[in-house]
Image 1 (tube, rainbow, N blue to C red):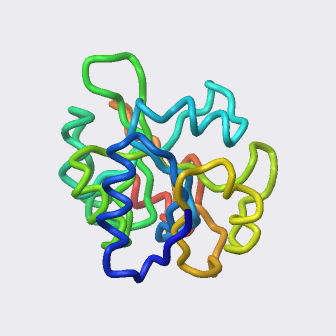
Image 2: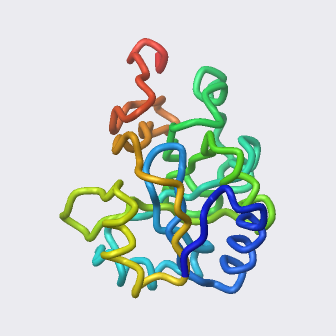
Length: 189
């Protein structure tokens, strides 16, 4: 199934399908992403993408302060002020020894879907593991229409640059990947 992002009922359709634990392709403020409710759709997305269990997915949240339901670490104001936007922050997960990559996307439409779901969702770039990220909507439809429950068409991606990734720990912050948001090292000091 395919819908257009600007359809008036697109947010409701996406939220309903996500809550039904379906996997879809959604446009973000960076690249198109495979998305689904966290934990419940992880294996489905891994199978479609062909991605091993050693690489976690980014977790998208609706509001910046939602990160505190995931972690107890203090987020420096210099980073926190960059949300919503194309910044992913890897933080220690509450009550575990794991880390989790969290992003509050700059796209209000996408944040509305996450908010309607009432829970974070996964996002990982639309491509088979080891292959280039797809940005042409026709290529996305041709490659994945039989694998996902819904594709939301927002036209061709104008940029295939993913989010910037920062690792935040008790020792401080470090840049893992410079992406579409350029962060000078001195901001992290």
